[in-house]
Image (tube, rainbow, N blue to C red):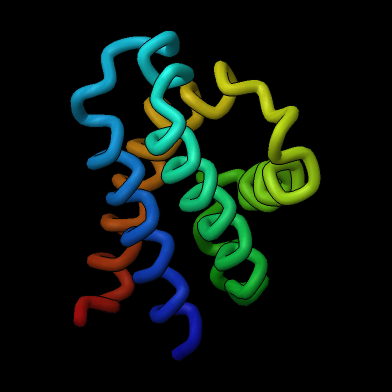
Length: 115
């Protein structure tokens, strides 16, 4: 099942983002750390790219997640990399990504997609 593979990837990318920001306590600290900014942007982009590959059936079954916004963010990062608002990125990474990760881990368990 392709969706299982893509779900695993999104969980992995989300976990990386959370791990990268464990010791970051403010937007200012995030903005001043080029490596963390690049790492978070890359993984957000990968989440969006992978989300595009999920089946519509899967996305419909996990309607708590705003897949169009995730894909839209990927497009914004890809096309406006230098001009991305890092406050938005920081908020997505510290607020939305942990929520998405929690939902996807629950979905993985509920759908018995455990590896």
